[in-house]
Length: 486
Image (cartoon, rainbow, N blue to C red; front, side):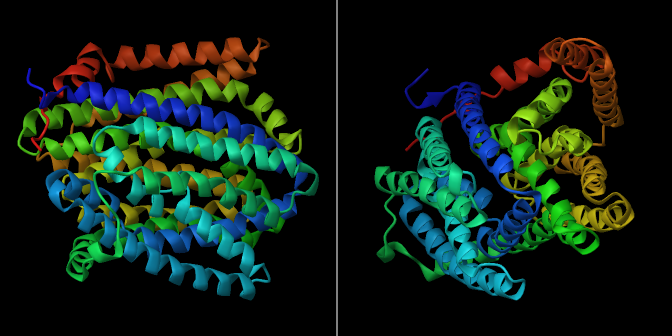
Protein backbone atom coordinates (compact mmCIF):
# COMPACT_ATOMS: atom_id res chain seq x y z
CA UNK A 1 0.00 0.00 0.00
CA UNK A 2 1.48 3.33 -1.04
CA UNK A 3 1.98 6.30 1.25
CA UNK A 4 -1.09 7.92 -0.32
CA UNK A 5 -3.32 5.04 0.69
CA UNK A 6 -4.95 4.92 4.07
CA UNK A 7 -7.22 2.80 6.11
CA UNK A 8 -10.42 4.81 6.47
CA UNK A 9 -11.73 2.63 9.23
CA UNK A 10 -8.58 3.20 11.25
CA UNK A 11 -8.93 6.97 10.85
CA UNK A 12 -12.61 6.89 11.83
CA UNK A 13 -12.03 4.67 14.85
CA UNK A 14 -8.95 6.60 15.92
CA UNK A 15 -10.66 9.95 15.50
CA UNK A 16 -13.78 8.76 17.31
CA UNK A 17 -11.76 7.34 20.19
CA UNK A 18 -9.76 10.55 20.55
CA UNK A 19 -12.94 12.61 20.65
CA UNK A 20 -14.90 10.24 22.89
CA UNK A 21 -11.95 9.87 25.25
CA UNK A 22 -11.40 13.60 25.48
CA UNK A 23 -15.12 14.19 25.92
CA UNK A 24 -15.21 11.67 28.75
CA UNK A 25 -12.45 13.63 30.46
CA UNK A 26 -14.21 16.91 29.71
CA UNK A 27 -17.48 15.61 31.14
CA UNK A 28 -15.69 14.43 34.27
CA UNK A 29 -14.25 17.90 34.78
CA UNK A 30 -17.57 19.54 33.94
CA UNK A 31 -19.25 17.29 36.50
CA UNK A 32 -17.08 18.83 39.19
CA UNK A 33 -17.86 22.35 37.96
CA UNK A 34 -21.58 21.71 37.53
CA UNK A 35 -21.75 20.29 41.03
CA UNK A 36 -20.52 23.60 42.42
CA UNK A 37 -22.91 25.57 40.18
CA UNK A 38 -26.06 23.53 40.84
CA UNK A 39 -25.40 23.26 44.55
CA UNK A 40 -24.62 26.98 44.91
CA UNK A 41 -27.29 28.63 42.74
CA UNK A 42 -30.93 28.52 43.76
CA UNK A 43 -33.39 26.96 41.34
CA UNK A 44 -34.61 30.46 40.49
CA UNK A 45 -31.07 31.73 39.79
CA UNK A 46 -30.34 28.66 37.70
CA UNK A 47 -33.53 29.39 35.78
CA UNK A 48 -32.27 32.90 34.98
CA UNK A 49 -28.90 31.49 33.85
CA UNK A 50 -30.53 28.82 31.72
CA UNK A 51 -32.99 31.18 30.03
CA UNK A 52 -30.26 33.68 29.11
CA UNK A 53 -28.10 30.93 27.68
CA UNK A 54 -30.93 29.40 25.67
CA UNK A 55 -31.86 32.72 24.05
CA UNK A 56 -28.29 33.41 22.91
CA UNK A 57 -27.80 29.78 21.85
CA UNK A 58 -30.91 30.11 19.70
CA UNK A 59 -29.77 33.35 18.07
CA UNK A 60 -26.23 32.12 17.44
CA UNK A 61 -27.46 28.93 15.81
CA UNK A 62 -30.02 30.72 13.63
CA UNK A 63 -27.84 33.68 12.62
CA UNK A 64 -24.28 32.35 12.80
CA UNK A 65 -24.23 28.60 12.28
CA UNK A 66 -26.03 28.85 8.92
CA UNK A 67 -25.66 25.11 8.50
CA UNK A 68 -22.30 25.48 6.79
CA UNK A 69 -20.23 22.91 8.65
CA UNK A 70 -20.98 19.91 6.45
CA UNK A 71 -20.53 22.04 3.35
CA UNK A 72 -17.19 23.35 4.60
CA UNK A 73 -15.96 19.81 5.29
CA UNK A 74 -16.92 18.70 1.78
CA UNK A 75 -15.28 21.74 0.15
CA UNK A 76 -12.05 21.46 2.11
CA UNK A 77 -11.80 17.76 1.23
CA UNK A 78 -12.52 18.29 -2.49
CA UNK A 79 -10.89 21.72 -2.97
CA UNK A 80 -7.93 21.61 -0.64
CA UNK A 81 -6.01 24.08 -2.78
CA UNK A 82 -8.64 26.75 -1.96
CA UNK A 83 -8.64 26.12 1.78
CA UNK A 84 -7.43 29.62 2.73
CA UNK A 85 -10.13 31.33 0.67
CA UNK A 86 -12.88 29.00 1.91
CA UNK A 87 -11.95 29.27 5.60
CA UNK A 88 -11.27 33.03 5.55
CA UNK A 89 -14.61 33.70 3.87
CA UNK A 90 -16.46 31.43 6.30
CA UNK A 91 -14.95 33.02 9.41
CA UNK A 92 -15.63 36.53 8.07
CA UNK A 93 -19.27 35.71 7.45
CA UNK A 94 -19.68 34.16 10.88
CA UNK A 95 -18.00 37.11 12.63
CA UNK A 96 -20.40 39.55 11.01
CA UNK A 97 -23.44 37.46 11.88
CA UNK A 98 -22.15 36.87 15.43
CA UNK A 99 -22.12 40.63 15.99
CA UNK A 100 -25.72 40.83 14.80
CA UNK A 101 -26.73 37.95 17.08
CA UNK A 102 -24.97 39.56 20.06
CA UNK A 103 -26.81 42.87 19.58
CA UNK A 104 -30.17 41.15 19.18
CA UNK A 105 -29.51 38.99 22.24
CA UNK A 106 -28.62 42.03 24.34
CA UNK A 107 -31.87 43.66 23.29
CA UNK A 108 -33.87 40.56 24.25
CA UNK A 109 -32.11 40.50 27.63
CA UNK A 110 -33.02 44.13 28.33
CA UNK A 111 -36.64 43.50 27.32
CA UNK A 112 -36.91 40.54 29.73
CA UNK A 113 -35.16 42.31 32.59
CA UNK A 114 -31.88 40.41 32.35
CA UNK A 115 -28.29 41.64 31.99
CA UNK A 116 -27.32 42.56 28.41
CA UNK A 117 -23.64 42.27 29.37
CA UNK A 118 -24.15 38.67 30.46
CA UNK A 119 -25.86 37.94 27.15
CA UNK A 120 -23.01 39.52 25.17
CA UNK A 121 -20.35 37.60 27.11
CA UNK A 122 -22.21 34.34 26.57
CA UNK A 123 -22.39 35.10 22.84
CA UNK A 124 -18.59 35.47 22.81
CA UNK A 125 -18.25 32.14 24.60
CA UNK A 126 -20.53 30.35 22.14
CA UNK A 127 -18.46 31.67 19.22
CA UNK A 128 -15.04 30.68 20.58
CA UNK A 129 -15.87 27.52 22.52
CA UNK A 130 -14.79 24.01 21.59
CA UNK A 131 -18.22 22.79 22.72
CA UNK A 132 -19.93 24.54 19.81
CA UNK A 133 -19.32 24.44 16.06
CA UNK A 134 -19.09 28.12 15.15
CA UNK A 135 -15.95 30.28 14.95
CA UNK A 136 -13.58 27.81 16.55
CA UNK A 137 -14.85 24.99 14.38
CA UNK A 138 -13.77 26.86 11.25
CA UNK A 139 -10.24 27.18 12.66
CA UNK A 140 -10.22 23.45 13.48
CA UNK A 141 -11.28 22.26 10.02
CA UNK A 142 -7.73 21.69 8.65
CA UNK A 143 -7.11 19.40 11.62
CA UNK A 144 -10.47 17.62 11.39
CA UNK A 145 -10.35 16.89 7.65
CA UNK A 146 -6.88 15.36 7.95
CA UNK A 147 -7.74 13.20 10.95
CA UNK A 148 -5.66 15.08 13.53
CA UNK A 149 -8.32 14.97 16.21
CA UNK A 150 -5.70 14.77 18.97
CA UNK A 151 -5.00 18.52 18.69
CA UNK A 152 -8.70 19.45 18.69
CA UNK A 153 -9.41 17.08 21.57
CA UNK A 154 -6.52 18.30 23.71
CA UNK A 155 -7.62 21.93 23.42
CA UNK A 156 -11.18 20.94 24.31
CA UNK A 157 -9.83 19.35 27.48
CA UNK A 158 -7.88 22.56 28.19
CA UNK A 159 -11.17 24.51 28.08
CA UNK A 160 -12.72 22.16 30.62
CA UNK A 161 -9.69 22.26 32.93
CA UNK A 162 -9.64 26.06 32.98
CA UNK A 163 -13.41 26.26 33.49
CA UNK A 164 -13.34 23.81 36.39
CA UNK A 165 -10.45 25.66 38.04
CA UNK A 166 -12.25 28.99 37.57
CA UNK A 167 -15.49 27.73 39.10
CA UNK A 168 -13.59 26.18 42.00
CA UNK A 169 -11.82 29.44 42.87
CA UNK A 170 -15.03 31.46 42.50
CA UNK A 171 -17.29 28.96 44.28
CA UNK A 172 -18.01 31.31 47.18
CA UNK A 173 -19.16 34.14 44.85
CA UNK A 174 -21.05 32.18 42.19
CA UNK A 175 -23.88 33.96 40.39
CA UNK A 176 -25.26 33.70 36.83
CA UNK A 177 -22.90 36.53 35.76
CA UNK A 178 -19.81 34.90 37.29
CA UNK A 179 -20.60 31.52 35.73
CA UNK A 180 -20.99 33.06 32.26
CA UNK A 181 -17.74 35.04 32.60
CA UNK A 182 -15.78 31.96 33.68
CA UNK A 183 -17.11 30.03 30.68
CA UNK A 184 -15.88 32.73 28.28
CA UNK A 185 -12.45 33.23 29.86
CA UNK A 186 -11.80 29.48 29.98
CA UNK A 187 -12.45 29.08 26.24
CA UNK A 188 -10.23 31.97 25.14
CA UNK A 189 -6.75 30.31 25.39
CA UNK A 190 -7.79 27.29 23.31
CA UNK A 191 -9.32 29.55 20.67
CA UNK A 192 -6.11 31.55 20.40
CA UNK A 193 -3.91 28.43 20.24
CA UNK A 194 -5.93 26.79 17.46
CA UNK A 195 -5.82 30.07 15.56
CA UNK A 196 -2.02 30.13 15.67
CA UNK A 197 -1.35 26.39 15.26
CA UNK A 198 -2.67 26.05 11.69
CA UNK A 199 -0.05 25.75 8.96
CA UNK A 200 -1.85 24.35 5.90
CA UNK A 201 -4.47 27.08 5.50
CA UNK A 202 -4.07 30.71 6.49
CA UNK A 203 -7.04 32.78 7.56
CA UNK A 204 -6.44 36.39 6.55
CA UNK A 205 -8.68 39.30 5.47
CA UNK A 206 -6.97 39.33 2.07
CA UNK A 207 -8.26 35.82 1.36
CA UNK A 208 -11.90 36.76 2.04
CA UNK A 209 -13.93 36.43 -1.14
CA UNK A 210 -17.38 37.94 -1.62
CA UNK A 211 -18.01 35.35 -4.30
CA UNK A 212 -17.13 32.52 -1.91
CA UNK A 213 -19.38 33.98 0.79
CA UNK A 214 -22.22 34.21 -1.71
CA UNK A 215 -21.59 30.63 -2.84
CA UNK A 216 -21.60 29.36 0.76
CA UNK A 217 -24.85 31.17 1.48
CA UNK A 218 -26.57 29.86 -1.65
CA UNK A 219 -25.57 26.27 -0.92
CA UNK A 220 -26.46 26.69 2.74
CA UNK A 221 -29.94 28.16 2.20
CA UNK A 222 -31.82 24.90 2.85
CA UNK A 223 -29.66 24.21 5.88
CA UNK A 224 -30.15 27.76 7.18
CA UNK A 225 -33.87 27.15 7.22
CA UNK A 226 -33.36 23.76 8.85
CA UNK A 227 -30.98 25.12 11.48
CA UNK A 228 -33.44 27.89 12.32
CA UNK A 229 -36.23 25.36 12.75
CA UNK A 230 -34.00 23.10 14.87
CA UNK A 231 -33.21 26.09 17.08
CA UNK A 232 -36.95 26.68 17.48
CA UNK A 233 -37.37 23.00 18.37
CA UNK A 234 -34.63 23.10 21.03
CA UNK A 235 -35.85 26.38 22.55
CA UNK A 236 -39.61 25.97 22.36
CA UNK A 237 -39.83 23.74 25.43
CA UNK A 238 -38.10 26.41 27.52
CA UNK A 239 -40.40 29.15 26.22
CA UNK A 240 -43.53 27.05 26.86
CA UNK A 241 -42.27 26.10 30.32
CA UNK A 242 -41.64 29.72 31.26
CA UNK A 243 -45.11 30.60 29.91
CA UNK A 244 -46.97 27.94 31.87
CA UNK A 245 -44.58 27.56 34.82
CA UNK A 246 -42.12 29.60 36.85
CA UNK A 247 -38.40 30.35 37.03
CA UNK A 248 -38.14 27.40 39.40
CA UNK A 249 -39.54 25.02 36.78
CA UNK A 250 -37.18 26.43 34.16
CA UNK A 251 -34.35 25.99 36.65
CA UNK A 252 -35.16 22.29 37.02
CA UNK A 253 -35.13 21.84 33.24
CA UNK A 254 -31.89 23.83 33.05
CA UNK A 255 -30.30 21.58 35.67
CA UNK A 256 -31.23 18.52 33.62
CA UNK A 257 -29.75 19.97 30.44
CA UNK A 258 -26.58 21.10 32.24
CA UNK A 259 -26.04 17.89 34.20
CA UNK A 260 -26.70 15.19 31.60
CA UNK A 261 -27.42 17.01 28.32
CA UNK A 262 -23.76 16.90 27.19
CA UNK A 263 -23.66 13.13 27.72
CA UNK A 264 -26.38 12.53 25.15
CA UNK A 265 -24.50 13.94 22.17
CA UNK A 266 -20.91 12.89 22.93
CA UNK A 267 -20.99 9.60 21.03
CA UNK A 268 -23.10 10.59 17.97
CA UNK A 269 -21.21 13.86 17.53
CA UNK A 270 -17.80 12.25 17.94
CA UNK A 271 -18.58 9.46 15.48
CA UNK A 272 -20.27 11.80 13.00
CA UNK A 273 -17.44 14.34 13.01
CA UNK A 274 -14.89 11.59 12.39
CA UNK A 275 -17.10 9.68 9.92
CA UNK A 276 -18.29 12.51 7.67
CA UNK A 277 -14.94 13.41 6.00
CA UNK A 278 -14.52 9.75 5.06
CA UNK A 279 -18.03 9.57 3.59
CA UNK A 280 -17.28 12.71 1.57
CA UNK A 281 -14.19 11.00 0.14
CA UNK A 282 -16.16 7.93 -1.00
CA UNK A 283 -18.71 9.50 -3.31
CA UNK A 284 -18.07 6.83 -5.96
CA UNK A 285 -18.13 3.72 -3.74
CA UNK A 286 -21.90 3.93 -3.28
CA UNK A 287 -22.72 0.35 -2.32
CA UNK A 288 -19.89 0.00 0.19
CA UNK A 289 -20.67 3.45 1.60
CA UNK A 290 -24.37 2.64 2.08
CA UNK A 291 -23.67 -0.65 3.87
CA UNK A 292 -21.30 1.12 6.22
CA UNK A 293 -23.76 3.95 6.94
CA UNK A 294 -26.47 1.51 8.02
CA UNK A 295 -23.98 -0.50 10.08
CA UNK A 296 -22.79 2.67 11.82
CA UNK A 297 -26.40 3.67 12.58
CA UNK A 298 -27.11 0.30 14.18
CA UNK A 299 -23.97 0.45 16.29
CA UNK A 300 -24.77 4.01 17.39
CA UNK A 301 -28.27 3.03 18.53
CA UNK A 302 -26.97 0.11 20.56
CA UNK A 303 -24.17 2.10 22.18
CA UNK A 304 -26.56 4.94 23.09
CA UNK A 305 -29.16 2.53 24.46
CA UNK A 306 -26.46 0.77 26.52
CA UNK A 307 -25.31 4.09 27.98
CA UNK A 308 -28.87 5.11 28.90
CA UNK A 309 -29.71 1.72 30.41
CA UNK A 310 -26.52 1.61 32.46
CA UNK A 311 -27.12 5.18 33.63
CA UNK A 312 -30.66 4.76 34.97
CA UNK A 313 -29.75 2.83 38.15
CA UNK A 314 -26.94 5.31 38.84
CA UNK A 315 -29.01 8.48 38.34
CA UNK A 316 -30.14 8.95 41.97
CA UNK A 317 -26.52 8.81 43.14
CA UNK A 318 -25.41 11.05 40.26
CA UNK A 319 -28.05 13.71 40.92
CA UNK A 320 -27.25 13.67 44.63
CA UNK A 321 -23.57 14.25 43.86
CA UNK A 322 -23.95 16.85 41.14
CA UNK A 323 -26.45 19.03 43.01
CA UNK A 324 -25.77 18.18 46.67
CA UNK A 325 -29.32 16.83 46.85
CA UNK A 326 -31.00 20.02 45.61
CA UNK A 327 -32.63 18.20 42.66
CA UNK A 328 -33.03 14.72 44.16
CA UNK A 329 -36.81 15.10 44.30
CA UNK A 330 -36.83 15.69 40.54
CA UNK A 331 -35.21 12.36 39.63
CA UNK A 332 -38.01 11.42 37.20
CA UNK A 333 -37.18 14.44 35.05
CA UNK A 334 -33.56 13.32 34.77
CA UNK A 335 -34.55 9.72 34.04
CA UNK A 336 -36.94 10.47 31.17
CA UNK A 337 -34.46 12.93 29.71
CA UNK A 338 -31.73 10.28 29.70
CA UNK A 339 -33.84 8.02 27.49
CA UNK A 340 -33.79 10.53 24.67
CA UNK A 341 -30.14 9.53 24.06
CA UNK A 342 -30.63 6.75 21.45
CA UNK A 343 -33.32 8.78 19.66
CA UNK A 344 -31.15 11.90 19.57
CA UNK A 345 -28.27 9.79 18.19
CA UNK A 346 -30.40 8.75 15.21
CA UNK A 347 -31.50 12.30 14.44
CA UNK A 348 -28.00 13.80 14.77
CA UNK A 349 -26.42 11.09 12.64
CA UNK A 350 -28.95 11.28 9.80
CA UNK A 351 -28.78 15.08 9.70
CA UNK A 352 -24.99 14.95 9.28
CA UNK A 353 -25.30 12.23 6.62
CA UNK A 354 -27.82 14.35 4.70
CA UNK A 355 -25.47 17.33 4.46
CA UNK A 356 -22.44 15.24 3.60
CA UNK A 357 -24.29 13.45 0.80
CA UNK A 358 -25.62 16.72 -0.59
CA UNK A 359 -29.22 16.15 0.56
CA UNK A 360 -29.30 19.22 2.81
CA UNK A 361 -32.85 20.08 1.71
CA UNK A 362 -34.01 17.00 3.57
CA UNK A 363 -32.88 18.59 6.83
CA UNK A 364 -35.60 21.20 6.37
CA UNK A 365 -38.17 18.41 6.44
CA UNK A 366 -36.54 16.81 9.50
CA UNK A 367 -36.50 20.14 11.32
CA UNK A 368 -40.11 20.84 10.36
CA UNK A 369 -41.22 17.52 11.81
CA UNK A 370 -39.33 18.23 15.06
CA UNK A 371 -40.81 21.72 15.44
CA UNK A 372 -44.36 20.56 14.78
CA UNK A 373 -44.01 17.63 17.17
CA UNK A 374 -42.43 19.85 19.85
CA UNK A 375 -45.33 22.29 19.64
CA UNK A 376 -47.96 19.54 19.78
CA UNK A 377 -46.37 17.51 22.58
CA UNK A 378 -45.31 20.64 24.46
CA UNK A 379 -48.82 22.03 24.56
CA UNK A 380 -50.10 18.58 25.47
CA UNK A 381 -47.70 17.82 28.34
CA UNK A 382 -46.08 21.01 29.70
CA UNK A 383 -49.11 22.89 31.18
CA UNK A 384 -50.03 19.98 33.45
CA UNK A 385 -46.64 18.39 34.14
CA UNK A 386 -44.32 21.44 33.87
CA UNK A 387 -40.62 20.43 33.82
CA UNK A 388 -41.42 16.71 33.63
CA UNK A 389 -43.84 17.49 30.82
CA UNK A 390 -41.10 19.35 28.93
CA UNK A 391 -38.88 16.27 29.09
CA UNK A 392 -41.70 13.89 28.11
CA UNK A 393 -42.51 16.20 25.19
CA UNK A 394 -38.85 16.09 24.12
CA UNK A 395 -38.80 12.30 24.29
CA UNK A 396 -42.02 12.02 22.27
CA UNK A 397 -40.74 14.50 19.70
CA UNK A 398 -37.44 12.69 19.21
CA UNK A 399 -39.27 9.37 18.84
CA UNK A 400 -41.29 10.79 15.94
CA UNK A 401 -38.18 12.44 14.49
CA UNK A 402 -36.10 9.25 14.74
CA UNK A 403 -38.67 7.20 12.83
CA UNK A 404 -38.83 9.85 10.13
CA UNK A 405 -35.03 10.02 9.93
CA UNK A 406 -34.67 6.26 9.46
CA UNK A 407 -37.19 6.45 6.61
CA UNK A 408 -35.26 9.33 5.03
CA UNK A 409 -31.95 7.52 5.38
CA UNK A 410 -33.17 4.76 3.10
CA UNK A 411 -34.45 7.37 0.67
CA UNK A 412 -30.90 8.81 0.51
CA UNK A 413 -29.67 5.36 -0.46
CA UNK A 414 -32.48 4.80 -3.01
CA UNK A 415 -33.59 1.64 -1.23
CA UNK A 416 -36.96 0.49 0.17
CA UNK A 417 -37.27 1.05 3.90
CA UNK A 418 -36.21 -1.98 5.90
CA UNK A 419 -39.10 -2.09 8.37
CA UNK A 420 -37.41 -4.91 10.25
CA UNK A 421 -34.47 -2.62 11.05
CA UNK A 422 -36.90 -0.04 12.42
CA UNK A 423 -38.72 -2.71 14.43
CA UNK A 424 -35.41 -3.95 15.86
CA UNK A 425 -34.52 -0.43 16.96
CA UNK A 426 -37.88 -0.08 18.73
CA UNK A 427 -37.50 -3.48 20.41
CA UNK A 428 -33.98 -2.74 21.62
CA UNK A 429 -34.84 0.69 23.04
CA UNK A 430 -38.11 -0.53 24.62
CA UNK A 431 -36.51 -3.68 26.03
CA UNK A 432 -33.57 -1.68 27.34
CA UNK A 433 -35.90 0.69 29.16
CA UNK A 434 -37.78 -2.22 30.74
CA UNK A 435 -34.62 -3.99 31.89
CA UNK A 436 -33.04 -0.87 33.37
CA UNK A 437 -36.16 0.19 35.26
CA UNK A 438 -36.73 -3.33 36.61
CA UNK A 439 -33.16 -3.63 37.86
CA UNK A 440 -33.20 -0.11 39.33
CA UNK A 441 -36.16 -1.12 41.52
CA UNK A 442 -34.49 -4.25 42.90
CA UNK A 443 -32.76 -4.11 46.31
CA UNK A 444 -29.29 -4.49 44.83
CA UNK A 445 -26.28 -2.21 44.59
CA UNK A 446 -26.66 0.48 41.87
CA UNK A 447 -23.45 -0.57 40.12
CA UNK A 448 -24.62 -4.18 39.91
CA UNK A 449 -27.97 -3.02 38.51
CA UNK A 450 -26.11 -0.82 36.02
CA UNK A 451 -23.93 -3.71 34.83
CA UNK A 452 -27.02 -5.92 34.53
CA UNK A 453 -28.84 -3.31 32.46
CA UNK A 454 -25.82 -2.97 30.19
CA UNK A 455 -25.55 -6.72 29.63
CA UNK A 456 -29.31 -7.03 29.18
CA UNK A 457 -29.34 -4.35 26.49
CA UNK A 458 -26.46 -5.99 24.64
CA UNK A 459 -28.25 -9.34 24.85
CA UNK A 460 -31.47 -7.91 23.41
CA UNK A 461 -29.57 -6.19 20.59
CA UNK A 462 -27.80 -9.42 19.62
CA UNK A 463 -30.93 -11.56 20.06
CA UNK A 464 -33.03 -9.47 17.67
CA UNK A 465 -30.13 -9.04 15.25
CA UNK A 466 -29.77 -5.26 15.42
CA UNK A 467 -26.00 -5.66 15.58
CA UNK A 468 -23.74 -8.51 14.77
CA UNK A 469 -20.25 -9.40 13.68
CA UNK A 470 -20.92 -8.18 10.14
CA UNK A 471 -21.81 -4.68 11.35
CA UNK A 472 -18.64 -4.40 13.37
CA UNK A 473 -16.59 -5.61 10.42
CA UNK A 474 -18.23 -3.03 8.15
CA UNK A 475 -17.52 -0.23 10.59
CA UNK A 476 -13.93 -1.31 11.18
CA UNK A 477 -12.67 -2.75 7.95
CA UNK A 478 -15.01 -2.54 4.95
CA UNK A 479 -14.61 1.21 4.70
CA UNK A 480 -11.36 1.20 2.80
CA UNK A 481 -10.36 3.66 0.13
CA UNK A 482 -7.43 5.60 -1.18
CA UNK A 483 -6.58 8.86 0.47
CA UNK A 484 -6.93 11.64 -2.09
CA UNK A 485 -3.65 12.67 -3.60
CA UNK A 486 -2.34 16.07 -2.70
